[in-house]
Amino acid sequence: MKYTITTLLLLLVAGTSMAQNKKWTLEECVTYAVENNLSVEQFELDLENAKINEKDAFGNFLPNLNANTSFSSNTGFSINPTTNLPTNSTQNNVNAGITTGVNLFNGMRDVHQMNRSKLNTIANQYRLEDLKDDIRLNVANNYLQVISNKESLKVAQAQYAVTEQDLKRTKELVESGVVPMGDLLDIEATAANQQQQIVNAEGQVLISKIALAQLMQITDYENFDTADESYEVPPSEILANSPSSIFAKALEFRNDIKFSKANVEVAEKDLQIRKGALLPTIDAFANYGTRYSDVAQLPVAGLPPGSPPEFFTPNFTDQLWIFDGVSYGVQLSVPIFNGFSTRNNIDRAKIDVERAKLQFEQDKLDLENTVNQAYVAVKTSAKAYEAAEKTLEARRLAFEYAKERFEVGLMNSFDYSQAQARVDNAEADVIRTKYDYIFRIKILEFYFGLPVVLN
Image 1 (cartoon, rainbow, N blue to C red):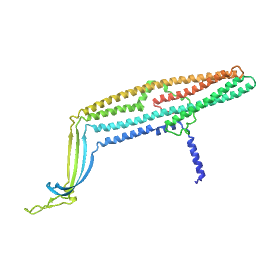
Image 2 (cartoon, helix red, strand yellow):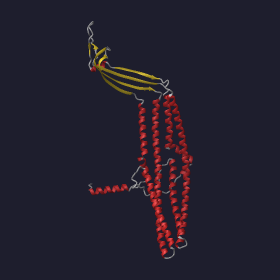
Image 3 (cartoon, rainbow, N blue to C red):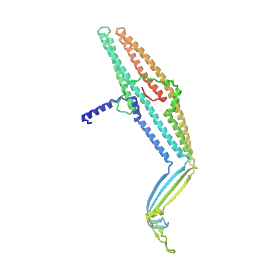
């Protein structure tokens, strides 16, 4: 299919417009925030570094292999490398060799280091996932704040629309002489106040969207927006579980607890590594070497008995085979005294183990306290939301009664405005307590192992 330049430009403009008008859902916000958060990227680098350390630990079990070669030239007095006799000449020498070595025993430190590196990789994975969990909760909280502010704005706009109708009706009543001009002025003041509330509500929506965008590492604040949706309080059986059962469940899967426990195991491995320094080490080695010298001389074989010795200089290749050799052996090193350094390192490692254990216990206590607070917060926010709904219902009934009295001239405009203001405040409280209740439910469900999803 062929496209004209005009058609392509129209498609490009349409695509750009769609990108700018994208409405982000909660799931999209969470996914994007986790994938683009700078701290997540840093923790991922730490995880990659831990995996490299694993490779280092595995490499400790492998033998090393090194090749070496050297060239030297001497002029003047020196020692002939083949006859060991002094000579006064210029000689060129080449030496080459291959060396290998392997550790046979070092107090099990290589084994403990390998296990330690594996545990450290697991700990970094838990640390990364715990950060992602925190981001998901923060995004959900900020997302609900945007939705809550949007609903408050809609309520303020709807209230202003009603006031405009009241203003129109009051003008008619003033013109007919039913109500005084002062009542019209009071209604106009109420309308002006509501316009100010709309401006404030718009500002709160913008501020909350910027906060969410910053959490997601998005800088195009002007075009960032959330999906136009509202949420009702989801059905949840979370309060059917006791705080102790929720805490017990949280201990099983919470990544911060797993991370803290892994740190204890890493510290214990560090202690074993330090203790290994008290034991002897055994190393095996093997060397192969050869050499060449341009002044090397070897006796000529097969001369008649009694003949004076004759010498010849072998060529380069022949010397490499003639003068090569192999050496091998085993080396034992026994630590005796190093200024208390090893013992002090062991004592420090013991302290680190105790510190990690204390931190692990503290993290469990913090989690238990957090779960209990979250449980109480759900119950409290549920009661607050229920009370706000009842208050709103009563305020609406009172306002309808006040409206009827105002329209027949039995209530002044000030009292009427106060009745409407009480309805406005009650509706704002319902929105605030509803979304606070929703978020509290999701937090408690999250500690019970349920994902942060809004239905």
